[in-house]
Image (cartoon, rainbow, N blue to C red; front, side, top):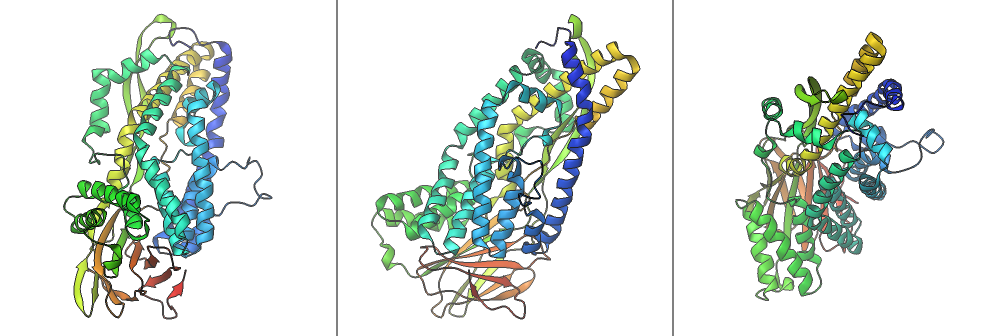
Amino acid sequence: MMLNSRLPSRFLNLSIAMILLPGIVGCSAFQQRDRMATFNSAYDRGNYQSAANAMALPTKKEDSGQNGRSGDRVLELLHLGEAYRLAGDYDAAISAFDQAESGMKYLDTQTVASSAMGKVASVLVNESSRDYRALMSEAILVNTYKGLSFLAKGNSDFARVEFNRADDRTRRAVDYFSEDIRAQREAVQSGPTNAASVRRNAESREFRSVLEDRYGDPAGWAVYADYIVPVSTYLHGLYFLAAGNGQSDIDRAVSSFERVARMTPGNPTLAVDARLAQSLAAGKLRREELPPMVWVLYENGLGPVLEEVRFDVPLIVTPRDRPSLIFAAIALPRYKDRRAVPGNLIASSGDGPSVNTDTMAQMGRVIRTEMQARFPGILTRAISAAVVKGVMQYQATEQLGAVGQIGSIIYTLATTQADLRGWQALPDHWEVARLERPADGNLTLKDSQQGLLGRIKVPDQPFTLIYVKRPTMVSPATVMLLDLQGNNPGQRLVLPAPSNQTSAPL
């Protein structure tokens, strides 16, 4: 459909009918926001079982009106899986993440092959009414968290599968984003707008000036050079360093460690790990000759969330072949940082030096790297919606007078909203340190600003990961002691320890 032709009456009737949609969509959005608020309140305090309860999916009997697809529940499943994982219910976590992953595959298919009518509707209603499309970085972290969960269960074979899946998604990321951008362009071209008009508006000097002034320039964001989740690539390397079989697995560890070390050149642990893997690959060292080793991985704080940036922009529309300048509202999502827990972790023993964790990756940079690639499509959809709604207002006013004008304005205001959904259980950043296992296995873990967290008994095994997650200063630290070779089930602690806590198998 071309913008320079008169909108047919059936399209106008559809437009008027859709004025009723914002109320329906808004009700669902309010329910989702309420659940998220309940989840975040519990999650921020480290009450992960309550957080899981807030996101628990309805039973089939309660699920009236739902079609059972996991695609429309991906966001809930992501939060549910992480809450279960941190609560120590690994089977439930893996199940939730499996369903989320299935939903992500469904959405990938829908993006490329969705019907023309679906494309029309997705432009005319607000973005958050669509099924949630997970970020590639979120999908990579799903596989990483599943890998950690299988290590906690002492299942090395399944952990291997998940770490490999995370690495495979990382390698395919460039092709994925190229396909995603192409699909977005095709959706606009086959939708109700004129692609040339959208492109002309997007490239106009006036529009670019307003965009840069009110939203900022995505080219100036702090991003990584590659589409990568450094912690996922690092854990892939760590697993194959510890549990790999043969030269090819050690080569995988070398590749992953080198890649992460290049991205964070100032981190001493990453550099030492890369050299260790290189020495093993070259035959200068044998894994059996290494002393028992311990890595501390600290997942710190709360990651970025989306905020709406809403502003008016000048657009050219051409109803009835008469070019007209209108000022239309567009709403764009932009990430804002939340907060980290101040300081770092200090691990020490009675018979050796202490080590401090150092930052290895920022979640904000990971997400903005992906957002920078997705932004042209997001912007194009926003302009498309604004142009369509501008023409709709013109036609509704012409054919229905004041009633049409008022109705179309109400509809435009209600549906011009950015999609602010995202996985809010991700951290602000990750830190890492490495040390040899003390002879007696006893380690003291401290917060550099808050003091003693607790004492840990490291199992007598060749390679141990001490995984620590702490979302906020008011939450305790959840600590998991994982056998990186996957031969033994892990242990889970909460530090500072409740009075009745004992170190329990996972």
